[in-house]
View 1 (cartoon, chains in turn yellow, orange):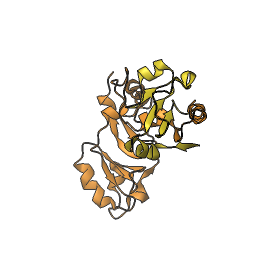
View 2 (cartoon, each protein chain N blue to C red):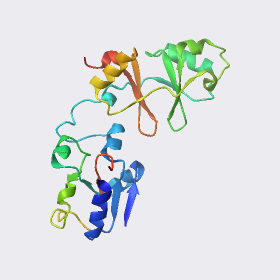
View 3 (cartoon, one colour):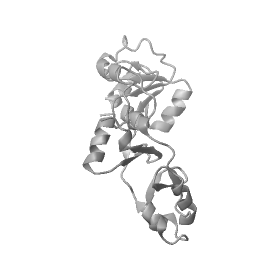
View 4 (cartoon, each protein chain N blue to C red):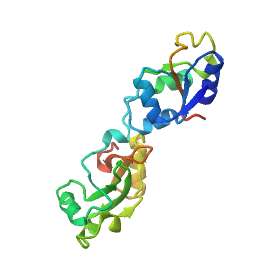
Length: 67
Length: 154
């Protein structure tokens, strides 16, 4: 189940220790990203690419503006 | 892109997946911290002055006028209880009936810029419009400050 959120909920989740994932291409991530975000580009989002994440903890994904 | 990523995580067995739908555009527009190679490049919010006079809709002009006189800016901004920008009071508007309320004489809906606007672009916009000040708000319209054109790099 995926929940779409806006900034206030994001703030709550980050304060509670959520994992933050930037799914933009590596260069865009390198240019600028949210503090603490890790980069897993959409094209690499598979079992191997997400092995570093804890499946039982909250994960927040973001890109540029959802498009 | 992020909706597809969130869906994919669900199919991989992640139990609690959230999609920050407005993404980094929203984050940056709030003037929040950034990381990365370009993070040190200044944005409009980095030039924002917080000492602008603010008042509420029902404040009498008399209560605002003295504060504006003592301010480095020749105007006041009208905000809601939550800090959302509603209007602007220029000096000329403060010279009217002192019993008038801010709401009755303010200029409604002044133009604003986002916190993450590059300073060069902001300066260009201000020059094209013959403006000397830009008002910076967050995505909810809350006042963050004002930027003087003279403070922006050429």
